Length: 126
Image (tube, rainbow, N blue to C red; front, side, top):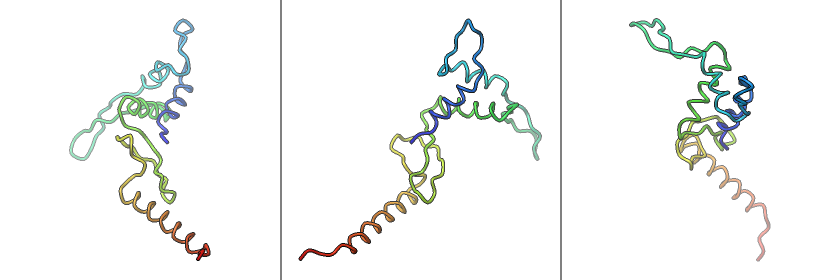
């Protein structure tokens, strides 16, 4: 299940509506753009000089910048289907369901062991 779309919709709903003349609806990207406008690049001192960082005046602005970047690419944010992990991961393939091959293997193995355990509990019909 992708959470990028609901996150983008939530940010769009939280954004200011703008002028009455423009009539920006809840799904209008202009509302997200209104949250992103105050954010911008800044030079930050670092050990060996300066680095460029994106500075946002609020958490909502930072989330809006991340949502805008996410919605403008072909990547998705999904929750790993491994019930033991369930962490969020950015994927670029429409087929991705797990955060790693190891995580997928662990889930498949867990299901296989569960089925074998259930099979051994049932009495055999001879």
